[in-house]
Length: 171
Image (cartoon, rainbow, N blue to C red; front, side, top):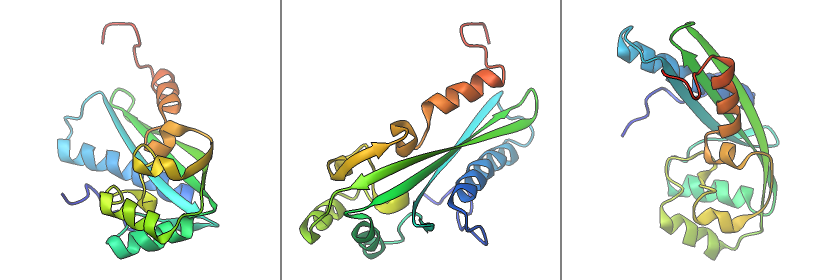
């Protein structure tokens, strides 16, 4: 399935700005596809992995994924997840960025190949899913686990409340 939006970074070099731009692009694309009849709420999110400012997007193929995992192993990296919320009533898009740090254990080539054989690396930033087999490679997390998975739940809840979502009330 092709991506909903063009995910190429263009001239955006800042990892946080890239995540925010992609999350907002997703919402705008849904609004465009709905042709003005959008639902009351639309959520978009995007995750970017960065090591010393270098962005690790979705791998193009197994070789690309292997290279990313080799560079991530045995070191810390940043996971930046942007969540954007569109409220049809106000017509505004609220966007928040959550930054977390993940530490990977050193990995052998055999471990990297084992993970690549699982196929979990496909279609995800940095070539790994923390909620899957790659969880065994993670030695430490500083930040939001749900943001690393791809949707920072606490921030999403805070955004809904700030934008008048009727928790406990009739919609």
